Length: 332
Image 1: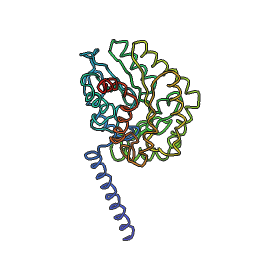
Image 2 (image 1 turned 90 degrees about the vertical axis):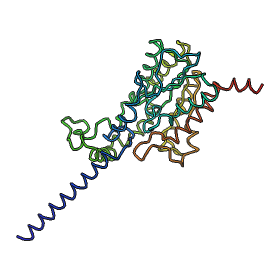
Image 3 (image 1 turned 135 degrees about the vertical axis):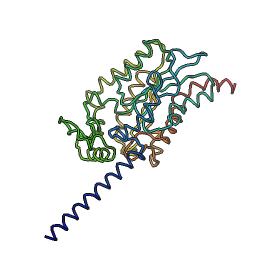
Image 4 (image 1 turned 60 degrees about the horizontal axis):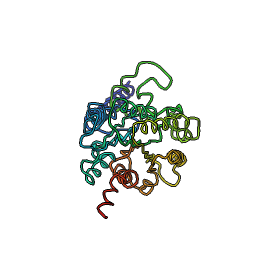
């Protein structure tokens, strides 16, 4: 009858309109959206990583403008910043905006030719991999005079058996399941992004991730984490280099109720007991808690403003002695 035909027409038009909206969204995300997300869990973020990180790596695979020769000419001291995506600058397009590069520029301005600064961090590195990377460079004969290990608090997660959001790629059959990915979720940009957001806000293991991470510092996970810190310090000392540590807070939940205060205190106390110079960046960033410090709403990595704040703190409180003797001589 006419009513049934009309319903069919309305349904067909609705489907066409819905398909047009999805097509428009896919077109926009495929050609105009260029942004990262916190755990690199979407095709949009993976494309961002390929464009702004993978294409900027030097011969040794580090995201750094300069190459990494075995020795530094002219008697300069080499400083290596090592860590994970916070240190590498996930979400930062221009490498010169990273805190390591800002510190390098200031060191060069204050003592030209005195230091060669390298960023040897990488995405997703945890403490054992960081120790292994530094140890391998020493064993291969690379000159390193000072290692600055920038701790991101999730460096302990491997030992706490935590599932990171994004460990199961968007579009897979689901947590704990097997099967071929549904191509509309795994091979697109817009639908893939929507699915990742859905998984982020509906999976209970994702929602409790930060609570479990906080508890890891009071669990047995602390023992292997500390053991690798011991080994990192030991390998630096064995090769006549110095280890220093900076601890980055999670910037999305700063404030009076910041949940990781105990973790910061534990790392700080460990470093001081071992004689490792340490800078806790949480009190520094607490003064800027009202500012926008993260890359975007779905990427809690530090943005350019946060990197600038970190660079100033590193120069003032962690690397200040590298240029102070010259300044003292000038005053005398």
